[in-house]
Image 1 (tube, helix red, strand yellow):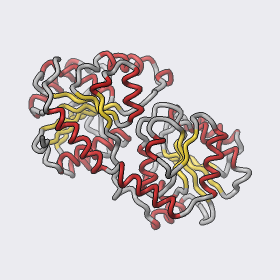
Image 2: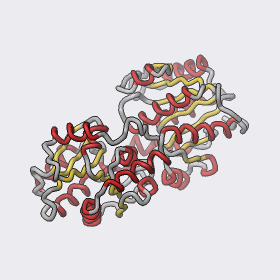
Image 3: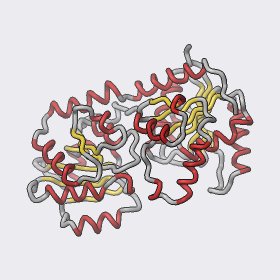
Image 4: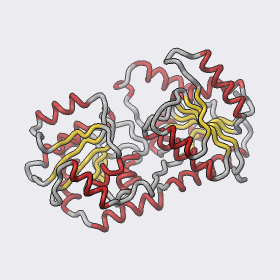
Amino acid sequence: MTTNGISILLLARSLEIGGAERQLVELAKGLHRCGCNVTVAVFYKKGALLAELEGAGVRVIDLRKKGRWDLLVFLARTRHAISEARPDVLYSFLGGPNLVAAAVRPLVPRMKMVWSIRASDVDLAHYGWLHGAAYRLESGLSNSPDLIISNSDSGRQFAAAHGFPRDRIAVVPNGIDTDRFRPDPLLRAEQRGKWNLADHQTAVGVLARLDPMKGHETFLRAAAQISPERPEMRFFCIGAGPLQAKLTRLAAGLRLAGRVTFTGASDPVPALNALDICCSSSVFGEGFSNAVAEAMACGVPCVVTDVGDSRLIVGDTGLVVPRSDPEALGQAIAGLAAGLNDEHKAEARRRIVEEYSVQRMIERTLAELARLKLRPVSAP
């Protein structure tokens, strides 16, 4: 059964730049190109990705949420927006929107509902009681959707182990815009100039928000381990976040002054092109690592910890080490750097183009929606 002409409403918190938000935008644009009637509804109509969606001709509805505790009026506005859009499918992205979708579902019983889950083995102890309570509620309501789409196999396994119905969870990996993320020698030269990198120096970086799940401490300790033996290496933490002050102090304590740079939030395309090796040092929570796949699309080989689906993404184009093991991470970085060549770079990009392009993600999503239309609506 074709899904062309299907009406779909995508529900999200906002359109700020983030991995899930980027995937929502790519999905909305792709489904729109395929002839679907696509509307995006957001709690807060803000974010750098808003103009991109509207420029592609996708309608965006502002649900005008006033804050965390604006619930009843907000739900009424959401229900009104759904009634106005009259979608065949409501597809929500991440926990908060999933809970909102479940709350309004009984009011529109003929509509199909799809949830998205985007992470694996999250250590909720790092994020406060409210996140834990919300996840338990999400798990308790997880029989509500007709379909749950995980962006990783590890996310599917984690959700099923925490009460989500395994038989309703399908895996659709993220899609990378391989026209945007591609090798660019001019961008590489420009960015390396800004970072004061000489041609002979090897740039190793982590592209991630400075968050406990991303394992920057492991990365910095690995850098400290190999720095004395590899004076040509420079290390980069590309991203912003609440751990910046703590990590800066750690880098100073590890005597990495002059060897490590905290860039703050940066455009990922030139930053990735400037690297020779991309590292994912995550210790938990990773489902599908966009940063790893984007780096590979730019022709940058990766060293990753065995968290989420990172092992599956890199395949045999990079190296995989245990989580929270600075020694293993440092040895892998040094080993990969010693053997870098153009074929490694080409293989990394080829894997993303063939397996994880935006087009592949759209095709897989359409296939799941086509099967969904053949099933009766689940009881609210």
